[in-house]
Amino acid sequence: MTAARIAPRKILLINGHPDPHPDRLCSALASAYAEGAQAAGHHVRRIEVGGLALPPITSQAAFMAPSSPEVAELQAAVREADHLVLIYPLWLGAPPAVLKAFLEQVFRYGLALAAPGEAKGVKGLLAGRSARVVVTMGMPGFIFRLVFFAHGLKCVSRGLLWVSGYRPVREMALGPVESPDPARRLRWIARLRSLGAEAA
Ligand SMILES: Cc1cc2nc3c(=O)[nH]c(=O)nc-3n(C[C@H](O)[C@H](O)[C@H](O)COP(=O)(O)O)c2cc1C
Image (cartoon, rainbow, N blue to C red; front, top):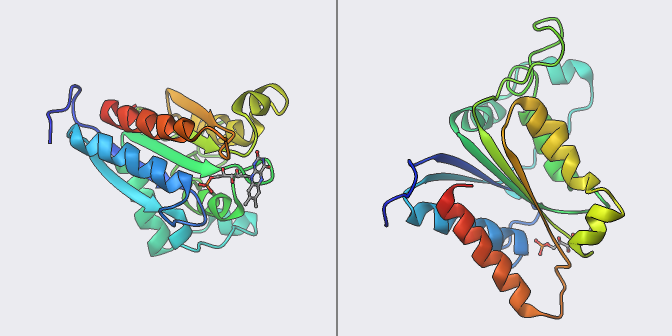
């Protein structure tokens, strides 16, 4: 292990792919980030959303209700981390449903936002933390940004993390994943490894 160039950070690394198989690009990117971070002395906790099978929230009452012990433990991990990294594939222009269910369960009132009536307006409760969102996709990243306004990324980076108080929230849109250029995939993996070393 080499010494961290910056103070060691507590990183929560979430692989949001429903299929946690190591052959998936998202899994490889998460592993590269973790390797870089750990080699630089940062503490990494990794969550595989595909292994959890959390159900989606189906009512306002369920969203307001106390969390299950499993969800409460995941919420504690979010609170404890000073940097959150979320990696997922774009599915039908959005985060996969399994990841959406995870986010609905974990980022409830009381963790991410003050419940209605408990604060004036919208009050994010996770200030003092930073985040990075990495989304992989079949289309070229520039088409995703220019034609689709990066909607499937912004809904998480702005609509959830920024609103919850994370600053900065950094973004990466990686595509096309099925590129005929295999070096492109290796460059992405190397980039994630160096970002892990910087805990950025
Ligand atoms: C169910 C499904 C829906 C998809 N929808 C989109 C999409 O809307 N736009 C897109 O560019 N790629 C789409 N893709 C391609 C995935 O984003 C791509 O396969 C993934 O990012 C590759 O990462 P992985 O190797 O970790 O699975 C879709 C793939 C699947 C399986």
